[in-house]
Length: 449
Image (cartoon, rainbow, N blue to C red):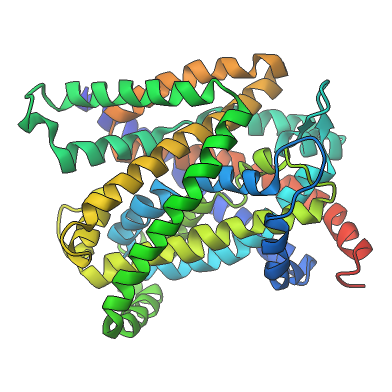
């Protein structure tokens, strides 16, 4: 088993390397182009975005708040808690700067992609909207759109598997609670049991469909995000004298060639982009699948709300995690990585039991992520086959939770990075091709001449 996993790790590393540069060029290059294309106006309308978030329209579909909650349930979670720790462990504190830059660019990308998801979509027989990258590709791009949509959907079947979440939840349970102290079944057997339990809990919600998922996530996510903010800000303000030196360290290390231990200076940037993209999924095309189901009539309204995702997810939540990890000094301890590193940081800075509270939040964030990711796969499979067959994907999804609980974190990161890169390429091509649809609506609304 161990030999097979090692071989899989090596294979994934070799596959992802040539795609890294394509992904960084697509996300950063394409995002910069869209920033100039929009003149940066969406970034100036954050206040309007928050107002739209809490308003409703009497149309078919889910509310904007439910759509964003579902997207945040998928992105605000273990990617922000253990993903940031992994990034700092691999590339040092300077990695945060490249995550911030990618997040700002990602806000523009989310604006464009989710605007298009409402502008260019279909309606089901019952009148419910049906939107997402595969639909704006197929409808908006007459020549190559269908090919790109199929490419995106096939990659999506694997990119939205719950590999990272199931793996990190299992690792958290094994490292913090150490069940072998109570029943010495062995690590493999305990991982199998945990994976099976996660599968059963997830099945109860995801087989209920979209309405069931958004109902649960819109209740859980805001409370957990609020609690995480409170704890994080308390720890930061309790160590206020360390904040300025920490920021100095972050910016110094971001441009320090010696700190780029994973492949030189460009390796540091690529790592930051990869982890930011994994964190907020800008450019990947996941979020438009939820936002495309929104009640919004105007695409730019939905685009503004969707833009809040990277802001809340990476610029706020990831920053809190990163600052706590660096201020605590836990990232300097050898052998600590992923969720275990973040748990140690919280334990050090929050009265010695911060890791227990974080453990509760990790479980809730992780479970909500397991719920929401399934819907992405359902939409991809439904597009490739028939809409009514989409739910069959959930059986494959549930089974993959057990697999993810058993393999190493390197394997699951490799699977996700490879799949996300393959999803990113057709999505960014379509965003650039269809960008004038968004700009025309911005002009009609007199955002600029």
